[in-house]
Amino acid sequence: MLSIPAAVVGAHFFNRYNKHKRLTSRDILWLFIALVTIVVISALAFYVRSETGIAIVLASYFASLGWIYTNYANANIQRKAHTMNVLVQLRNSTEFNKHRGLVLAKFPFGRPVTTNDLQELKAERAQGASYVRNKVPILDSVYYIVNYFEFMSVGVMNGDLDDTMIEHTYRSIFVNWFRHLQPIIYDAQVEQNGDRNERIFKGYIALVKHYDSLPK
Image (cartoon, rainbow, N blue to C red):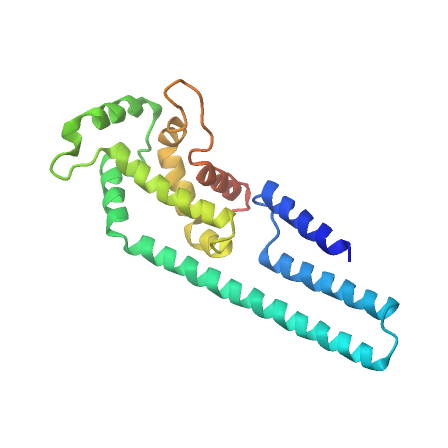
C-alpha cells in the first residue's frame, strides 16, 4: 500500500521537473494498472482466504481496471477535441492572419528579423502615429503571434493540448517562425534595468528547443 503514494508523488515531481520527458497519459494509465494489480495481489496473498473473498477482490479489480481505462479514454478524447478546436481557431483567426500578414509584408520568409532591425522597430512602436487609423506597429504584430505560440506551447507542456497532434501539424511552423523572429523574442526578455526575465516566452523557447532535438 505504501507504494501507491510513493509512485504518485514520484510521478508528480518527474512531470514537474522534466517537462519534455514527462510521463505521458499512456504511462500514467499503465502506472495505475500496475499499482492496482499490486494491491490486489497483496490482498489475495495476505488477507483473503475464502473463495467468496477472492471472487469479490477479483470483481473489484476488473471493475477498477474498467474505470481507469474509461477515464483515460475520455480524457484522451477530450484533449484531442480541445486541441483540434485550438488548431481550427488558429487557422480561421482573422486577427492572427492580419498580424501574420503585417509581419510578412515587412519581413517575408527568407528575410528574417536581425538585431539591426530592433532599433527601427522599437522607434516605430514608440510613435503615437503608429496606432492611428487602425495601424499597428510591426513589433506589436510580432508579439501577438509569439504570444499565441506561447499559449499553445504551455498547453502542450502542461498536457492540456495533445502533444502528438501539435507536433505533427505545427512543428515546422513553430520552429520556422521562431527562427524568423528570434532576435525579437530574446530581446523581449530584457527588462528596462537590463536584467533578463527568462520567464517571458519560456514555453515557446523550450518547445522549439525540444523540437530541434528530435530526429528530422
